[in-house]
Image (cartoon, rainbow over all chains, first blue to last red; front, side, top):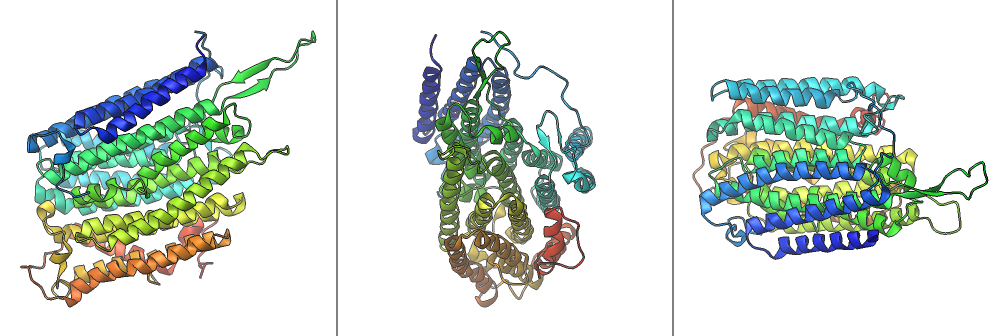
Length: 100
Length: 537
């Protein structure tokens, strides 16, 4: 049987890839996908623990996370469409009316 | 895979009474949405009135629950919803913020011709989310409340669809908001795993060896506190707590997690900025305080070793101390060089989160007897901040006109004597934000700083007071610009609409009342019997 720590390490790596992606990617859709990757890394952690403990609550949490992610995706893509209509670009470096 | 329910499946302890405020407001939100969908376009008045009525009914339910906050029946829904003074006092703050936002936004939706019903619905759902964040006693509930709040607020920030600034604000808020939610969620997952613990089952009668059984982790805050010391994986607990701190740090806009705040606050429509600076920040504090104060308390071990609970407590308290200092300093110092009023108020809101964090640190260090006082001081601070901040943004909304055109400090040159009503009230709010005696801001600062002093955080208080001194420059700077500079731009004093006049009267009264007679409010927040004469003065 694959030990628990392997799953945890894999999800930590996936989460880190997501974090790095959000920071270095310049396209809104890619950034959004990286956030989804972070959420799925969390789901993997939940499922790994849940299966290891033989406890179902962790898996229930995953369903909640997926629902929330879907709601977030709906709103997020709506925002992306609104910004694309006004600017015709999805590069975050172009989104600089407000200075950082 | 062999899965089983750790607890045998049983009907959850349904208790609608405990959830009454949230239920009333959710139903109101749905009703407002339906009214908007099935009637004509211009239903501004109807939906606003309905929203205000719903908020009033919710406030009534909250006050009705107040006396039972210390009774026996304070938990329901499988321990997910809790009834305590902290929840109720935060709920009142959220309701005040939402009601004032409805009033402030009335003139704005009219100018911009926006769909008011949708705006009111989103505002109500965001408020429900904030209330769930305060009432959730389970990380799942807090996460759901946070997402209900965040998703509604993302849309509100981008509500002016055709304005690039509003789009950009919404986009940045969305990306960084979901980024921080992912951190929070990872923290929850790690805490869930780390709080698993081993119990030895009863030895069998036949004399078999004691069996070790692994109990699954938990996301319930009370259960986490019980298991902090004997969790199976202490390092994961530390990592989880750190992730939770990052997630909440983003939500309350504390430095170094504040970079999104100025852009989002500047670009969002002004009434939405007012809401975001007061409401979600307070909700973030509600959840942040509940998780860290109640789930990771100081737990001494019985043995010789320093217990995990004590180490964790020290670690997060130290991190919070640094967070408080950074937040105050960054907010105030960067606010000095701003040329846009909304951006300046955004940095000021970061600084105020820092002052509230000072009270949070005090609450973390306090023993359970003093903890309620320190928590009440933080809630009072956030209430005072909400009132003065919403008042200030009400004036900024009116001066900005449609499309948020006049928000530069230059636009405020010399308007002081032409529209005294606006400039005098704005000056009062700025003085209160600064913390001049006899205002709400002063009382709030006195309370959080005195709590911190009581716990021996001298340096934190010294840094806080120095920061207040820095903030004199930019708050008074705006007042000077309004009254003592020559006007260079064309200016016609705007007529103050009725709704905004109501907001100004209410917030001015609030700032003065909280500044002069804080005793009743603070006693109610501590859930002792309200007394007529303030004991604090």
